[in-house]
Length: 323
Image (cartoon, rainbow, N blue to C red; front, side):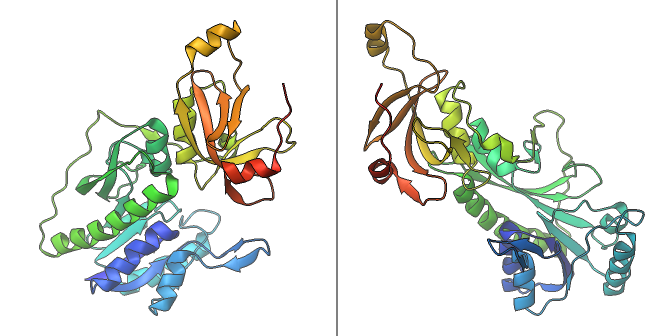
């Protein structure tokens, strides 16, 4: 089969490498345009483009694909180039551009998407992080036949992946990327045998994984500690989780924290209810902060402009004010 591939980040490059290793003929790759990155804002190729170049696969990088949109000329050029290739199928993984109807209909077998959730749960942009944030203990990958809706196409095959208590956004990403890479190879094997079965998504159980926003990184300590600990895991490494500690002008970035129950006897002895955000204790075991419900114990963090540190190291440079 003649296979096309559309993707941009590391999650997608893992799948592309898997397809190539499995011997599939990937004849073209679509990826987002090179973008400035790093402190020097140097123009940088996406992980998918880097993989394609390493394997001498032609890369197309339109800024848009709508024939009547802002980048209509680029879209028309890409359409002509793809039509000449006579693709059997286009594999899509975290591409970042909406595929218009002309592209969905162009390959003989349409477009197959590698989606990092067990659809219909967590349709949308950030299924990995939202699953952790919600407290799910199970997720997975769905290979889906794409249509014009937002992750609404028929399901083809699925694989489950457990969310371990220590998983964060990065570790779960890596597990799902490996799962998706293996699953798409299996999907193409079934496609070649005409053995892929399409199953419409059920109406019940639909949830949406909203795009991650930088402003979400600020932790609201009036929320329960269990919720905050999940958010910290989910938002590591992006967009990160931040809070402000007494004696520091700038927020610190939090990488690891656990939720503890309040010591009710201690609270009663003090004769007052602790306020959310109040510093309860500092030790090599962690920095304990009162939340709206329970205690958040911070165990790994980073000062603004500094390095990621375990709390025992962080404490050598931080001296909280005495109450």
